[in-house]
Image (tube, rainbow, N blue to C red; front, top):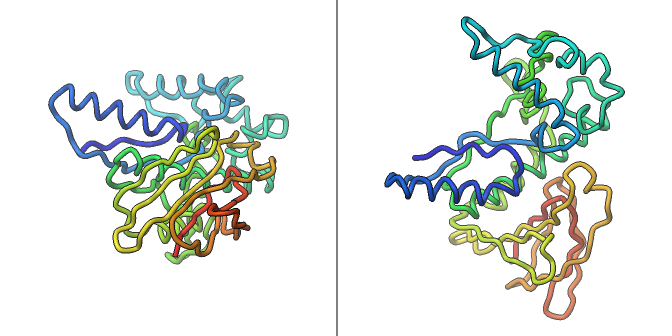
Amino acid sequence: MFDLRLYGDPYTIIPRVEFMRQRMKALGCGKPIICTEYGGPNLFEFPENRKYIELVVAWSQSMTSPGGQAQPSAGAGKNSVEELYKSMDTLAPQTQMFMQGCPPELDAKYQRIQARSLVMRNLFALAAGVQKTVYWYLPAHTPSRDERYDIMNLMYGKIGLLEFKDGVTDKRDAAADAFERMARALDGVEAVRRIEIPDRPSIFLFEAARAKRGLAYVVWERRDAFAGEDAAAVPVDLSLPGRTGRVVDALGQVVLEQAVGQSLRLFVSVTPIFIEPI
């Protein structure tokens, strides 16, 4: 099998999978594609954070220098992660939300973005023909003082979904609940395809064929990952087969629906909505 890690911008997943499929085909070594690591949001998905790419460069250089190893404060000095923490309250909120001990409202926003991203990544991966996805990683980790100054912790330190105490689940993040909702909605999935809506390119509608369970749908509007939740939901009319059952979004909110002729009108936002006809 070929293992492709699906971090980065979720909207690049389908072309990334297709690129690797074509490369394998050109080399005569076509393999089924799986994904054993994915997650997000990624620090550098946000333009406000791309000025910190030099921290990754410094970390990489420390790893590849003779006898070198990654130091907790990789890129020590003016632009180190430790320096960022010293001025955290002056940084862009898109940066702060990745940091340990950030304001609670930004931590909650990070978790909502993470929940949406988790659903989006799986829909894009399945639509691209990825056969299996495995989330990395489930347990949340509370870093030591030194660990939080590691660039890897800044990038991935909040990616865990569950917190454990004495070997028992102590807390579930919003993304853990979103994962469970997604798993229930897509249980038995055999194929996923995107249905384009004429004149509405920002609307992403996916149809999931679920063996004996029939069809399910997931829909959202493409928006800025950070600020998109602040805009009002927009009406979208969908022509779906069968009667509609419970309609709930990735964050667990029941979504209001209206019958408009032969169509179902939903108010769609940046949060994916699960639709299961009955």
